[in-house]
Image (tube, rainbow, N blue to C red):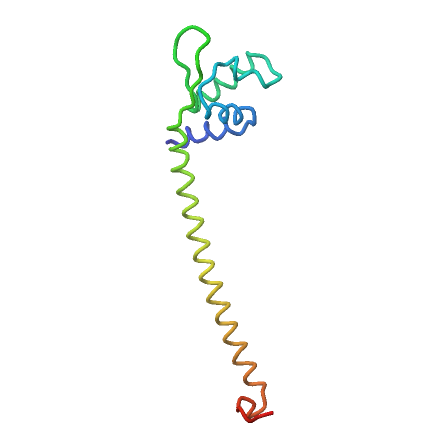
Length: 131
């Protein structure tokens, strides 16, 4: 997937109406009229949204007369998932390294505190017979 394609996909999904259309299409194909039902917008506005989704490769409509079913193109999501997973894995690696450093610092701090507390006790305080 090219950066240009990713830009179009994320831009298309930035709109809540288009995200809702994609969510509804994940349950099955629908016509533009069916997609338009819950919205207070013209059918022409729905077609504009569909055109953006089509240009991004998220949906397709077969050629032919109306009404044509709108189909979700799942392959785009596989490509997006690959892109997202790469950065998620990198972030997790950074967090694991940070966790290791923090654990090391915490262990060193705990050891220092233990040494300091032993130094502040009077001689013989560690002996079992000491009151």
